Amino acid sequence: MASFPVDKTHAFGKLILFGEHFVVYKVPALVGAVSAYTDCKLEYTAEPGLEVIDNRPAVPLYKEKKTEEGIAAINLTLTHLGVDTKKRGVKLTFGGDLCCASGIGASAAQVVSLARAVNIADSRSMSEDEINAAGYEGEKGYHGTPSGIDNTAATFGGLLRFQRTEGAPIFDKKTLLSPIRIVYASTGITSSTTEVVGDVRAKKEADEAWFADLIGKYTDLCEQGQKAAEEGDMDKLGKLMNLNHEYLQELTVSCKELDDLVVAARAAGAVGAKMSGTGRGGLMIALTPTEEIQNEVASALEKLAPQVWKTTFA
Image 1 (cartoon, rainbow, N blue to C red):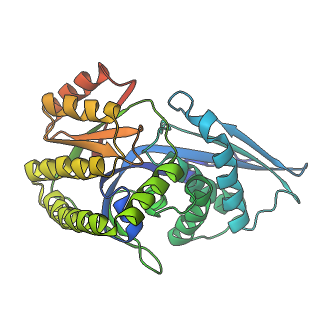
Image 2 (image 1 turned 90 degrees about the vertical axis):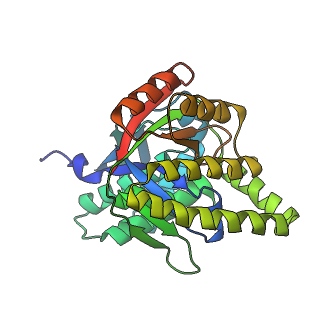
């Protein structure tokens, strides 16, 4: 029997340049897929039931804290795809080189890779849109009401402009004049997206006028950021990332650990830095226009952060 083609199940991690939390309220976001990926091997077994082997690299305690949500996400994905583990056993082995951490889209990469594995195992001919839809259903296990941005980046890769609507989300893959070099670092803290999103919703409902003003300023910033990214204006892009971080601080989704990494990255030469993802832990990202600056910023952050990575949006 031929070995399972796990290389065809790749699903990418992501970093949000602009839009975390705001994107939930149907305004645009800009997200870049990283080159690291999750893959999935699926085997059907004689005994009914579900067996999950999780070989993904992860920051300490990430997988332990996410175990219950992860099983829920896997079951939602399988149910959406019509796979009944009560009738036929399923053994899943997750791997790849994407290090699981809050903010990198690890949950979406997991369920999108699973959807790809089902597609292969059952000899289906699912479109990328169908893979993405299955990933969105699975994300509900982790996030309750996901924005859809993570599974879309995991499925399609590249740099994407994403916006939720009352119907299907709108996403547009962007072409860049020059690559965007990024350093990203982990606080080592795993946060709950469901809890943080709920806190933001509570702040919005407590002061609708304040939130409307903030989301209006963010929407203008995102449009400027998209233009700067497409034109290769790294200085302007960096300044807008800095401003986006201030807006996220105002939402109270940053934390001291994230703020310290942001300050250190800017001091080391990054033209912009901000938290990325859920916040209150997780990841920060830094914009580094040259390979030399990218290396210098990474070295500086390695003195503070438990994990540091370099990537490029192209």
